[in-house]
Amino acid sequence: MEFQRGNMVSLVYKNLKKGDYEVKPFQTFKNWRIASDHSETFAGVSTFYESYGIKVYRALYPENDKYFGGVANISSSIYERTFTTQSLDPKLLWYYLDHNYYDNFDRGNEPPKLIGSFTKTFLYESSSTIIIPQNVFGERIKPGSVQIDHYGSSSYFAYTLTDDTNGNLVDGDYDTTKLIGDDFCILNMGFNEQYRAYNFRNKQTLGVMDYSPVKNQIDYVYPKQISFIPGIPTTSPVSSSGTSAQLNGGYFKVVSKENFNIQPKQNFAISFWVNVPATQSNVNYTYNDVINKNTMKLVDYRNTQTRASVTEYQEQKTFQYPFDVKINNYTSPNPHKVVFGRSSGLQTLELTSSSSLATGSWNHVLCQKSGSLYSIYINGVIDATSSIDIPVNVNNEHEMFIGGNGTTSGILSASLDEMRIYKKALTSAQISALADNSYDLGYAYQTNIVGNVFYPDGVIVVSDPRPKYHNSLLGRSGNYDYNGRTDGFSARFKSTTTFYEHEIVCKIRKNEYNFTQNPTIIEGNVPTFDKIKDFATSSFFNPYFTTIGLYNDKYELIAIAKMSSPLEKRDDVDMNVIIRFDV
Image (cartoon, rainbow, N blue to C red):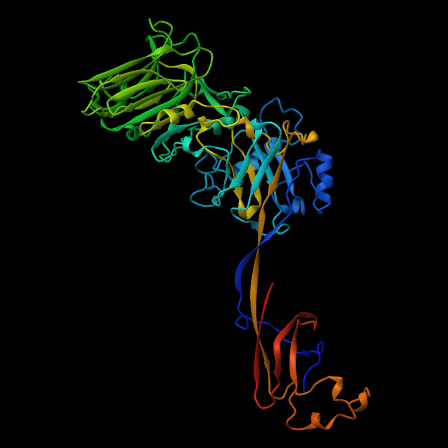
């Protein structure tokens, strides 16, 4: 006897217990809506979103999706005073990101939420954020699926941002051949994390961060004489970018001094941006130190009066040092020129630049050793060279300082930014890139990573210090000014949803369900079971079933299983039917 389509044998499977089924998690990916539109004003954007069932608000409450439910939120944080019309309180966004996603400078805090070992987290003065409520648009963002495109007529603001599957948001417009990389970088002081210091006076840090893989410890010397101001300017158009250190009696000590005992045959390059004033407040010497490793040393000696052993820092100048960079001040016959030195005690280099640094404005300086050739570059152009072979030891145990020498003499008054030391010689193209801080593609920062994607949390952040990315998701002024299609963006991503495969065994005993409700077994199609056709009463009659229904404890139908072919219900043996379904 065959079942007719639509009839069902009802197997009530109650009390699903552990062990009765197997859960096998796996993932599939779904495409979701475009997360933003570049063509409307804020009110228009709301209308655009609402046509897809998405509401947009300017207020940002990112701590938990319970605050905004089904809201796809776009917002921004900027700490420049010119953005006075931004209604969002930036401290809320800053505090949330700083403490939950990014590496706070206080090393004693909980570690940041990192995506993986190749994630580079950034939190700078400006950040634009997309919050995608999880469990509304899937469970998490699919790695490698994010793309944000600038829309506008100006090439200065153009970008195409994609995530690299490691949680880094990358601008694909950069020429990666101009990026030197971190493999040979042993010092990278950018000061961009120090926007806290000049926007939040009570957020004073213990020192500055080294962004190189070495992660040197760098402390303040006279911290009250160090302040942090807007950093190196861009060109075309001119705008400050990031944060710089303004030294006025204070300087830095690199505690990890042993990392800078560069071997005599090892090539190296020292790169930095500097803005020197016309006069220096400290003129004990005719020069002021930029990098010094030849003045102060930790000395052990015995006190002649107490006979006790003492260890303390003492001024002990040495004629053996791996490098020395200083700038002549106005008391020198060659004011505002760069002096690059190295010495083994037997051979000494002291190379002076041909050009003087322009005072009151930013200059890029690079001093480098390549074989026996020593060079000074000013603003990307070679300025002075000298050839000398120093084959013997140049290392020492002296302390290393930036902007001073460990004493009260020679302290530099200037602003410093983007200081790097490489254990390799650089090409002229790489040196030019370090001196390039153009608005559209400023290579001075030596990265194409401009933000992060936090996949599990549905958070996309653009947080690069370069002004090109300020309010990059909100129009030019940060007020959703997309009128006339002049400046906006489009964003796309994919979300992931986890499906669970359930396996349930339905047991049908031999004395159960040995009947059918198919009306074709009734004589004369009379709606009664008094007259049943003879074949249905035979002992050889076994019905077939094609469908199994699964019910919960309340006898509510929760799933219907369709057989690929009818299955005979035997009455001489028990039967097991395995049902698999995904939810």
